Image (cartoon, rainbow, N blue to C red; front, side, top):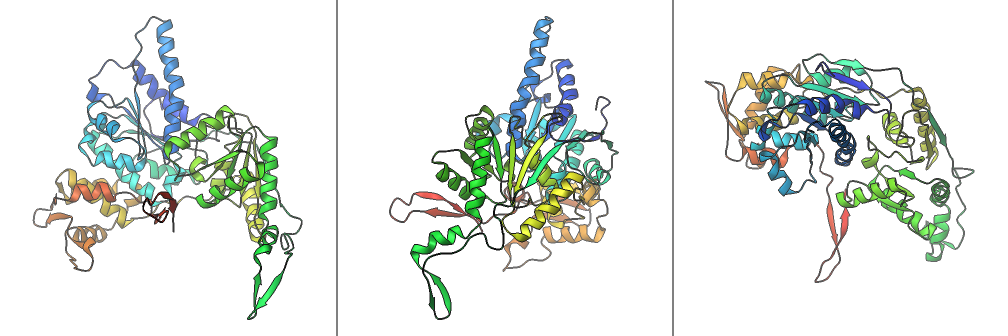
Length: 506
């Protein structure tokens, strides 16, 4: 890092990877002479999660305060190192300030970086030296990562030189593949020190027999051959479920530990389980944390958990990656996590310090889930993480980036293709696929039925010059990214006021 080389740093959760990634950049910024405000921005930190971005911004305050304090003790002039967060949660007023008064360190997400590159604010990115991609494993194997890979090449082109790229992760396999994703055509050194993380992981079956979690009692009648359960027997049906047993055991664990995170695999389940735990406890012992919760409330929940004012949080993947929860004693996982890497990240939220033991408990919901929990936990102990594979030539990502690039500048098709091909997912992009994408974007396949096929750019085939149509930039910034639309539906109370209750998704 000190030499300015590209590096992929692999180390267990809580080992200080993120701070290591920032230290040399902070050192350079502290020693840098005064520069014009428009040339301030030198470090971009890319996070796959908005919550992680906000957490990193808070955690940077300590080392930056230390630099200022040390300078004061030595009677030296302290550098005013400014940090700013730019995500989908950033207020419009702060976004407007970015172009005229950029920070020294920008903390952002892949999508927000793409938006900056596709706006006049991109001028502030010309002086960047270093890009840090945290939790790089969460991006390397999907289209979101492919999108970021092209954005990094656009950033190099804008700066007029290759920037230093640092990737950080606790769960990478195979390292060479992820390093290739990170560096594109540039070499990346893999830093993978011998380090072990100790896990105390157990699987708890909440009932004696998962084939019969409980007996249904009460009146059961027959109607046309179909079994019906009378209304008074609904509570008996609940007793026949494993859920009351799971909820009771989780509440016991919450009460035995000062700080607990309960991970579930959906937002709906997070809300339901949180409500049930509070009902059983007769008090608020837990709050739900997921992507549909407002950023202000998420931050308050995180701070209350850290400060000991809240006993537990029921979360989805919103708390999975890298967020510093130093005082969490126990992690509970309801149902098997989606992957071994996800399981390691989640259980690693407990004991999130160097040398500390990460304690976790898994609760399977049914017999098949028990088998999956057993396999995942065994692979977690052995460190057998799923392999990441970069997507190859995702043409939807290609189309988005072409429109965004042409919206900002006229391009010669060969030059544009060369920049995109530097990104690892597009190293072997066939010329025919590139030309077919340009054909589509320039309106070769018009259709009255599909408005999406109307031309987005102009392609002069004689000169090879690509130019933008009037709506190209607007289209790029409103339709960019690869995070799928969840199909959210608003829920309102009937009547004149139509008060909003919340949202349902597909």
